[in-house]
Length: 72
Image (cartoon, rainbow, N blue to C red; front, side):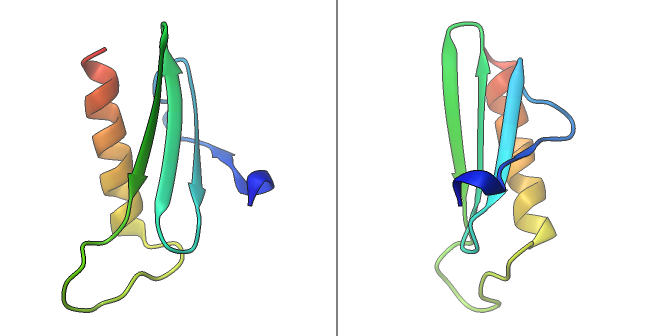
């Protein structure tokens, strides 16, 4: 999967990328001297199970990454 990374839209921090691993969304970015990784997956609970490309999980991963970035 190392070649499956894509740039985030919008960019988080100075540079960021995102990947759907098939089980979770993984975002990493850097800002100033900080490097941050966000790994978002559905909670362990009732279905629905994770589906590749789950837009809701991707949206929450991006939202969370943007909140972290705003506090750096």
